[in-house]
Amino acid sequence: MSETMRVEDLSNFGKPLVEFPKKAQWQQGRIFMSELRRRYGSLGLVVLLGGVFVERRRLKKRYSAVLARLRNIAGPGAVKETLLLVSMFNAIAQREGRDLAYPVIRSMTEKVAPYSMMAMYQVDELVRCEGDVFDNFKKFHMAMFAADAMQPIFRNTQTEGIDYFTTTVDKCMNVEVFTELDCPELAPFGCDHDLAGYPAIADAVQAEFRRPCTIAKGATTCNFRFYRKGTAPETEIIDGAPVTWEANLNR
Image (cartoon, rainbow, N blue to C red; front, top):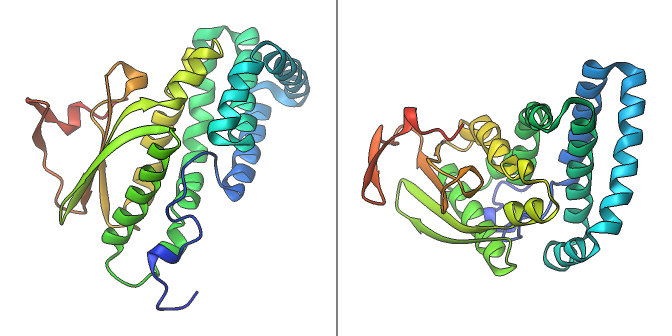
C-alpha cells in the first residue's frame, strides 16, 4: 500500500456492516469447528452438524418472509450468517437446553471477535494510512455507521470531538431478526462480539472503548463511546445519570 494512502481510500470505507469480511468468515468457521469438536468429540460434531443442516432447512421454510426481508435490507451474506447462527443455536439447544446454548455460542464468538474486528476495520491497512491513527479510526467507524443508518441496519446518531466520538443506536436489526426467528437468546450476539473485539484492536488504533448499555441487554439504546487512548474518564454523566465504567461494562 502506498505511504500516502488515505483512510477514505480503504476498500471498506463508508460501507455498511452487513456481514463478516470473508477472511473473518474463514476464521469463524475454523474456530467454531475446533471448539465444537473439543466439546462434543468428532462423532458428536458430526451428529451436531446434521442437526444444524436439518434446522437450516426448517428455518428457511418456516421463516421465509423474515429471511426475504433480511436479504432485501442486508444482502444474501447476512442471511447466510444468520441462518448459521440460529440453526447452530437450535441444534446445541436440543442437546444441552436453551439456557446453556448461548454460553456455548458466546464462548466461540469471543475467540472469533479479535480476527473479525481486525478485518472489519481493516486495521492492518488503517494504521499505515496518512494522518493520526485515532482520527482515521474515527472517520472509518463513523462512515460505517452512517452507511448502516441508511439501510436501515443500525439506526443511529453520532457525535464527535477532538479526542472522542460516540454512536448511539436506537434500532438494532440483530435484535429484531433474532426475535422474529424465535431465537431472542441470540440478540446479544453482536454485543458480546464487540466486547471481545474492540479491546483487541484498541492499542493499534490508539482508542479506548466504553459502552454502558445495549438494546439487546435491556436498554433503549446502544451507546458506543470511543476515546483517544489515555483520555477516557472514569465517570461521566449519560442521560442525566453518572456512569462509572468499571461497574458498567455491559457484561
